[in-house]
Length: 151
Image (cartoon, rainbow, N blue to C red; front, side, top):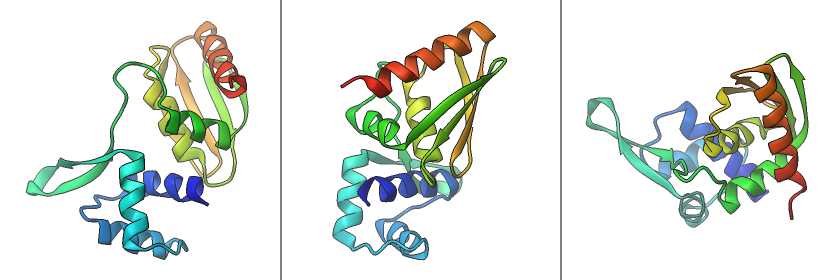
């Protein structure tokens, strides 16, 4: 349940400009999650969300991207828990995930900051990742598989 809630939090803050814990809790409740203020506060801390100023002088929660090119334990756990399969169509990877986990898995892939990955688009259970070349796509598939089986 926690992984699904964390996935939904990442999805919500990427979709909406959420300024407060109360607003995040309300959105989670609208999505069917039973949360308390303490739960949301703990989730924000565990996900290492920060507030960033945006247009109009307001602030919103964002996910901090790793700068060292390595996945944090949180992203690695989300990737392992949500990953189902990966396939290639030329230089595009199609990553299948557990239902509702595509946004979180895409965030984990983006956090890797691999040079080969141009960007990811996520739906509910599918991610399309644009990769620079066909050879790079094979390399990224291999990297993903190694992360999944790594203990």
